[in-house]
Image (cartoon, rainbow, N blue to C red):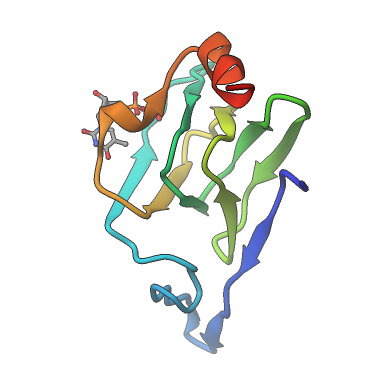
Length: 133
Ligand code: TYD
């Protein structure tokens, strides 16, 4: 599996600037039940460090940039998120970490379900154990 999968959004641009519209089942291949965003991240802070059992997500850096590490238990890949017109697919059972947030970074995340702590795997060794179950 290729861990880094982008969704390219259509940019509705004109001489006033740009606009991106995201519709469930269209630009985003699931019903969006939750939107959250991370901003004002302090220097040298890493976030994430978890995988989800079922949740599907698309992460979009609408301002600034940050570095995402994706890990499926076999391969670990990293990528910079720095474009408001591209979404990074975060599949279920993919360990992910975000690092190196720029001061102006706003990371918007579309999620297929509401917040549920029971869906989180927050220890990497538990994540690896779950993969071989
Ligand atoms: P957390 O998932 O730990 O952030 P990250 O792993 O991305 O660094 O979330 C931080 C806190 O916010 C935690 O107490 C759970 C809460 N939270 C919600 O209540 N709803 C949400 O949608 C999210 C993502 C987090």
